[in-house]
Amino acid sequence: MNATFAPPKVGVVKLASCDGCQLALLDLEDELLAVAERFDLVQFPEATSRRWDGEFDVLLVEGSVSTPSQAEELRHLRARTRLLVAIGACATAGGIQALRNHLDERTVAASVYPEPAWLESLATATPLADHVTVDLELRGCPIDRGQLLEVLTALRVGRRPQLPNEAVCAACKRRGAACVLVTAGLPCLGPVTAAGCGAICPAFGRACYGCFGPLPGANVAALSAQFAAMGRSEDEIGRAFALFTSWAEPFRAITAGSAPILGHPDRAGPSTRDGEAT
Image (cartoon, rainbow, N blue to C red):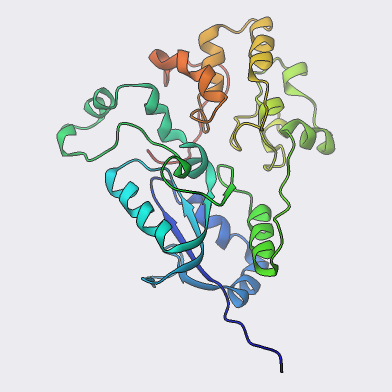
């Protein structure tokens, strides 16, 4: 007689984020019922009010660590989790909210809130790996639902997830998209950004924003030099890298010199888009 195995207990939680990466699970659509059959979703605030006080076989965590309570919660969750997966740009690189890491947190708070003393925030917004051991990362803003399905499938059958390990430029070539860096002179981060988005922005004539973070071994110095040769100033180059994954090295090395002008209304290069909450 075949043994009956209980489905893995899976949780989905968020820290400082916009919930977009959690929604990628619901966006699986046709595959969602199959996922629900093979996993026991014991906690998923976007879909159910059910809460779980036990241990997780797999925990998907969205968001950066931006407050002392979030840091404490993350450590508590890590202690109860066999496999912790960071999902999204916030969880893997600090996200948009990490732009404040280049500035004085107290000054930023005072410019936004009438009573900044009431806030309980950390001086920096940082990725999960700065606080606990992370077993696997899914990048993106938001994550790619196909990659999420691949990870869940691999975990269920006991194999290593097969995730892309190439630059966005490779996806551009497969789509037959014109290189906006060459044809339009846009400060595109595609050559140094990990693939996973399907090269959506360049395919529609816009520069890559680096949502999936730097490709391992990315030569940002060479790309910055190319931007300079195209006539971009040092500040413009810094702002091009100061977006969704600016706190991830080696992007951080470029953005560090742009702190005084982050968020300037006359920013050159790619403009920010609606995304993760600060």
